[in-house]
Length: 343
Image 1 (cartoon, helix red, strand yellow):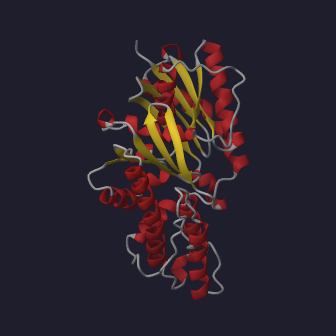
Image 2 (tube, helix red, strand yellow; image 1 turned 120 degrees about the horizontal axis):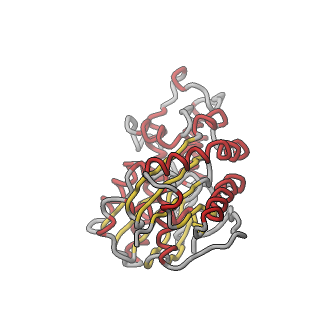
Image 3 (cartoon, rainbow, N blue to C red; image 1 turned 30 degrees about the horizontal axis):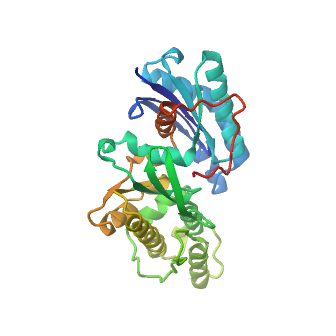
């Protein structure tokens, strides 16, 4: 039996829908970004995000079905992000998924957004190589998690951030340096021309723990900027002053990558995993992927194609396939879980 899953993702500021076949083949993957909408705020404005989802979700799903050359009658189930994420945004996707599933008599499957990032690997060319157990480092604007994946759908959370997520720290430092939103890719770009040893920024190792902390690093960058330019106004155009943006970006990035790399590899070695998976928006950072690959030695290191690093619905559909095969069927009382941990 051919299993085709419609995935719907609205956890933050991306309205996304996709059709995935047999959990590995992407028939369509449509993402409507709201980056330009939120750029003026330097971050996601929750109420505007949910309103934009409402305005966009019908056309995004229609596009996904059209690009996949299927109709609702060709689908096996509907998988939708239940959490974690912004409550208002999650509810838009959930209600849409419920309506479609109820109208067509399709199974409804609620998916953890973090689990979706893990299953983005199964949509890549290396899916056939993956062996369990593996260690997943999920790094994005809202999450920094170390997850031991023992087998399909069986997880153990080893640690996570106690304050800012790695992607959030990238975005905030980007804004501090006057770089355009979203800050993560801009910081990476600026860092290529900088000296990673120009500033001695702290590393929060949090001994005897797999947890992370990046708020102190972010504060250290702010202090370095203020010391050089006491009247610095966050968000100003950096081209008008002599702020060493490239060196600051490179030094900040080096600090955050060193901690992510060391903790991930040490955890992987301790738990004797077969591979390390880097996923989430920050997994698009090539410096991070290169650092972990170099430090891991003979251990396999995987990361999804760039278009699957950031939030998308194909990864939700891929996770939905696994849950469908395992017999999960959710009821119409399925509700959003904005702070839902992956256990």
